[in-house]
Length: 285
Image 1 (cartoon, helix red, strand yellow):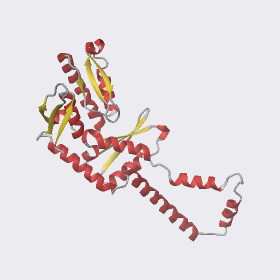
Image 2 (tube, one colour):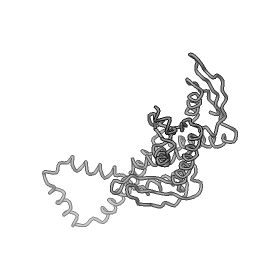
Image 3 (tube, helix red, strand yellow):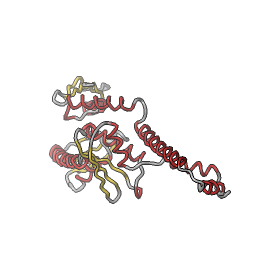
Image 4 (cartoon, rainbow, N blue to C red):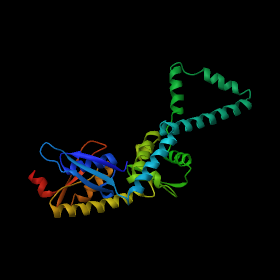
């Protein structure tokens, strides 16, 4: 989709509605006002992705199609776990087969020991233990290695232990598609990793690719400063497009010491957005 008509009670709201439908940012589009609206009449605009940005959005759509094709109508995380479990079970079966070949009379001792299981340990408890072992979660390294292998990519994984998180930074060639538009794909993979992987000391697992998170954070801090200058000069508020909670926090933190402006988050996830106000404007309200 290259263009979309948006409506709203005013032009600004109509533009925002069209941007949400296109999943595009304001700097990447051209805006044409079709109707300014008025009494009992909604404003209407036509928002079109500009020629210099269209290639970026076409790549994003192509990458989404490739991901859907790769998943084959099944959940990626479930496929990943299934392959790992099958691999683990095959290894166990091979080990059992080897033990049977090398069976010695002493094996009878093991049988007797099994028969002497305490009567307090019920059969269902044994079955529960076996299920828990089969459904064990995997390490972050295993998840990332499996991901790269499935997508036929090569990369180096660096594990970094921090106070509350374990960060996995992946570096290599042709990894931009794993990052996605403004990190959307990377954030989704990080979410999946926390579901299917075990964490040491209950730390949150964070996936980073080519140090994208720090680069994005620096970009957001610079954007926050420019926005604060613009809001302070114009005296009008500025509303960002919806973004991840971690990115909103970066902008909040960057502007919390700025005496000219104040910030506020509104809306519901995943469409929650941030507004920058002139400080005097909010105090009057």
